[in-house]
Image (cartoon, rainbow, N blue to C red; front, side, top):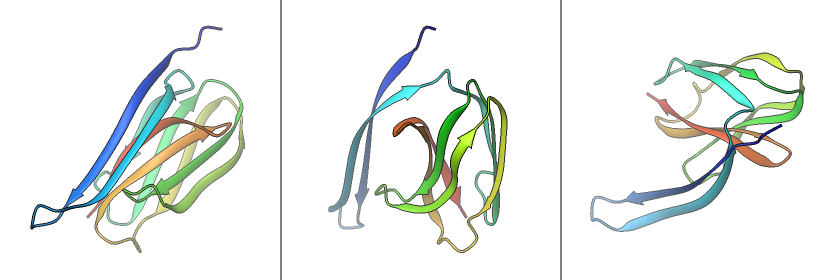
Length: 120
């Protein structure tokens, strides 16, 4: 089976009103785009419950986590083996402050998708 990898360099910088850089987060990611397809996160922006759905090409040990912009894990959405086919999970972000968060989908310790979620 052919594998397609895409190298992504993620840089997040937070700048204060005085133009000072207070947060810098660099990460290099190897993304396997073929394992997860038809990813849908709704609603986005959200204020309470978020639904994530996608198609998984192969059965795999999978981990889905929500992080802040610094990469700190805030919520483990899913952490188990999942069969090939449809994946659907609903989780709540209503206790989180307004801001930008990242949903990371990984298997075998490797990130395969990272998507932004906005909390309003």
